[in-house]
Length: 438
Image 1 (cartoon, helix red, strand yellow):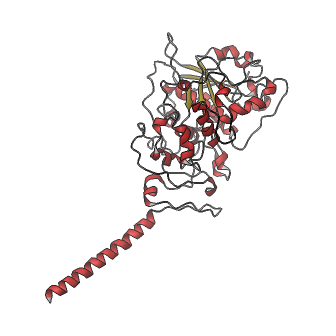
Image 2 (cartoon, one colour):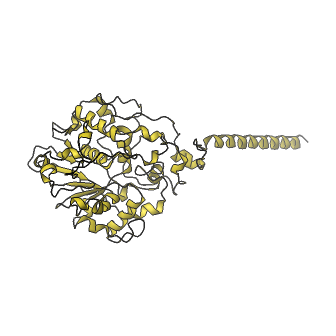
């Protein structure tokens, strides 16, 4: 009888403990699941526990101020996450996740979502040691040093993307990540991008070890500047977008070492700028091409370009991308900017207040801004020409508006005033030299 009572008691204890464990586990699980409701009533998707733990951070409704957005010197960096949250990562192997996370949609956010890993970036091996005493890397400006990451990963290629990286980057809208994109659609092209065999730029043989660069924008301030010879005298010259030189050599030079573009800019320039004499993108012997993966159409363009075939889908379907590079396309001289680099430029230097507005997903730095920061990370000294200055109203919108005065047009997807202030602040801090007219 005693044995039977003991068995009954033991069974009751076992059932009770099991029931308590079940209740506690359900309570814990409910706490770990994350949902988000925007002001417009859209609900964010619920993710599995593993997805939440591995990939999702906590949404923050506050935005850190931009690094340099005031007119009185470089703005003080307020965010406490500027340097501590960055970490160096080797090329990603051994993925943590086996499947793509559920797709996030921009419409579910009324402003830029902030994740607790938003300011975490991949970094590569330290860059070449510089022997240049004038290098911007030797700047003693404390705010610039706090924000600047000399080892930031610049380029995307097939060896530094895996499922874990895909899921991390899928939290960010394009061009800063893969939000709304399908894994298979993007990976068809990304898995074709070769790993760069050499740095973008190297010191010139026989020189003093300094890499001296000019970055040439398209601003009307260059019209009549007679800066062409000075520009071409640099070791390397960066240009972007509709980089017309023929007929404007006296003001803008004719040398192009690095051309930064999107699929849209390299295709649309042919007809938009035809009246100004544009025939093709720069194609100097040995030129380096750098692409900004702005959207899905860029990945579709990349697939055709890298395969040497016609584009198979999207707005450029049936076009042959390689014909737009005038025989100078070479995979060893073609680079694709990494989403971490693009996001880092926005987060630490050009974080516009417009990211708090409903059209946040359209807001990004200009192609010229991305080009200028690429130069700041690959050159020792940088001279900027054709960028907006304080007296921009005096000049035409573009330098190729040579015979007619056009008004500078402000589009909602770019914060031109913030960029103008940033260039001035970087100039005042001696990080770069900005041409501001005569």
